[in-house]
Image (cartoon, rainbow, N blue to C red):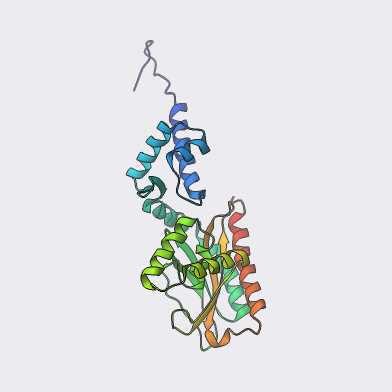
Length: 263
């Protein structure tokens, strides 16, 4: 133990360490809320820090894979370790318990299978589902990761993410479908964002259709999506608007629940 000149234990000044921890937390939160990669100068201006301090923080975060560099322009984005933190947060939040009564009601109202998807890094997973009680129904597999570029549940999320996610998704899609019309695809994403929902009809050749809507945290960051899915022959135009309204209302209810202060 450190002692002062009188022999008594010296008081440790924790204010400096607390300030440093606050800066690191502020930098991470800034990246979490950014809609594009950030450079040292941008971070410094946004947080009123010196470039030297920001550079040290970024190097520390990079060493732990919490952020990663975009080599083309020396800017930074969140790294894979941030996705690990996100996954741990979901397990502690118990999102399934929050969403379960809402998804169950949506299943009963639509008579179709309802699903809960969550964003994991640059992909998504199905976290839960409530199966349709009808004989012919759609069932999803929980756990595997899906790309963000295809499917209503994915596009409902992607349309509300920063541009870097969109760029990565388009790049992946072009590798799968070299002839894809990128301009048309981006226009579809803009429509999803403005309307608040996405629709897919037999997109993967499985005979399934889906209506999906995103849900958000209290700061407006998209966290995932919910969907109502069934055989394509039951997803005609008749009753389509009512079906869409029910899905959006359910997603909004999850957002409201997640945004509510927790005791």
